[in-house]
Structures are given as C-alpha cells and as structure tokens.
Length: 326
Ligand code: EAX
Image 1 (cartoon, rainbow, N blue to C red):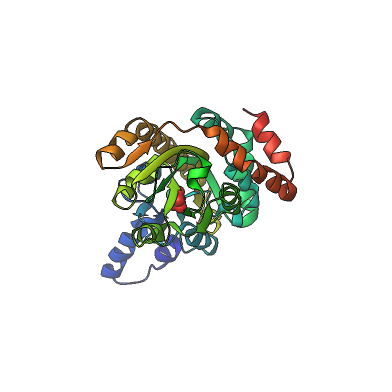
Image 2: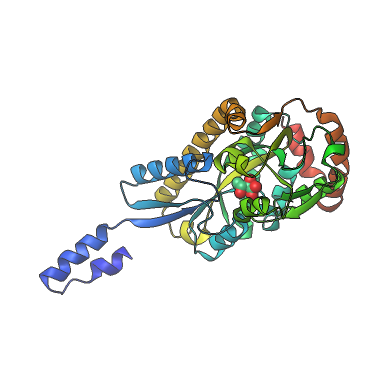
C-alpha cells in the first residue's frame, strides 16, 4: 500500500502532496467484541489500542466495534479467517468449533479459582493452545479473561441442580457446556450473545449464564431477577487476530501486536478482579436477588459425566496436562 503510493512520482505538485499525506495515513485495525463499551472487554480494547498506536508511532490505528456490531463471536471468528475482521476479543464459547483443542478449558469446575486458571493459561498449556490456533487459520495473541460463570433466571431462586431442573437456559454455542447443562437437567439453548438480551426479555428462554462482568456490562438485571453464584465454569477470553493481517507484518510489527494483546489481557483481568469485588453489590442495588451460598458439591456431581464424554472424544492428554500444571 505504501510502496504503491510512493511509486507515483511523476505527477502534479498537488497530487504529490496528497500522496505524501496518504503515505502517512495509518492502517486501520478493526477490533470487535460482543460486550458494551463499559465492559471489561472494552477496557481491554482500550489498552490494545493505546499500546499498538504508541509502539507503532501511529502506523496503526485501532477502531473498536463493541456490542456485537461485527456480529456474534462465531461470526467474528469466521471474519478473522477470511480477513474481514482484524482483531477479536472473544470467550472460548464458539472457539472449540474451530480449534477443538480449546474444549478442555470449557469443562465445568476445572479450575478452583482465578489464580489457578490464570496460571495454567500463562504457562505451557496456554501457549500450546495459542500456537494450535495457527493450525486453524487463526492467530492466538494472548489469553485474556471473561470470568467464572454463574446462572441467572427469571423464574425462581436456584441453589441446587434440582431447582434448576427444567429451566430453559441459553448457553454458548459450545458442546462441552451444552453437555454439562444437560447433565444438570437443564434444557440448554445455544444462541449467539447479541441475541440473548431480547430472548430473555421475550421469554424465549428463562435464563442464561455468564460472569458478573457480563451481567453488569449487559444490565441483565432489567430482564433477570435471580442470580446464583454457581461459578460452574471458568470462562477464558482470548485476543485473536487474522492471519491475513498478521502474515503481512514485519517481525517488529508483529511484536507490537503481541505486546498490545498482552497489555489488553492484563487490563481486562484487572477489571475482572475489580468487578469480582464490587459487582455483586451493584447487581443488588439494581434489584437482583443474589444467592451467594451455593453448595457446589451437587452441581459438581451432576456434571461429572461431561468429563467422560469429553475424554471419550478427545482423550485425556490435555486434561492431564491442565491438572498437572496447577
Ligand atoms: O464473551 O456469549 C457469551 O455468553 C460470552 O460470555 C460473551 O459473549 C462474552
């Protein structure tokens, strides 16, 4: 692009001046995510933008497209593969459809707490999974974070799997999650995130499950009365990029993208931690009934068959590695 512009030499002074201008024009990097511009993903998008624009001295300009403006997470991942989207911050929800290796991370009750999850993702297992994305026409830049997921619904307080039985719950388009919910006696309805608020509002589904971060950012209290802190699964996020963009970069430019993604992940994790501290109070202020005392034992017991189903299909190597590294 730049060489094309600078190659045009024998033109009028005016055209030359214009050429010089466009030679300096920044390359736009379109970054998409599904959450609002007040979310932890938006905090991460800001950090990405600030870091990439600073390191590249304005060579790149990042434009954030929040709130699913570029589509749901599955659609945006497809966009990365064909080069219509440059960078995406996404949960692993639909990612296993593209990179089956990441399904291991979606197993319920895999990680005990944030420290454990972050440690595994920042270690060898996390790096191997990022590398694996390269085999599926995606570039995994850094592990970011969505948070531990909890159940909300509009029907009744849920403190045990028996309470949840029969509820129609929107899940992500992720078969490991869907399997786990089926084991719980819940009827899972997979749906892209941008459709969830309306589906809850119209009663197409009774509930959904997401971290405090997402419940706050989406103001789910407007359409959901009950929140149960089930913490049934850790939800990683990942900063992905398009191979069509990344393959055209110099080594130095690529390192700016890596650093921007790492800064993004760090800023997002910090915001997740803040919302873990302050979020529940905020949800209560907005009228949600929050059940904090959940006995996780019966939930853990209920979803156990999901592990067998996972290892039958994918083997136990990744699961053993995840467990061995904590
Ligand atoms: O990544 O789809 C979901 O429920 C995700 O948690 C949300 O899009 C943020």
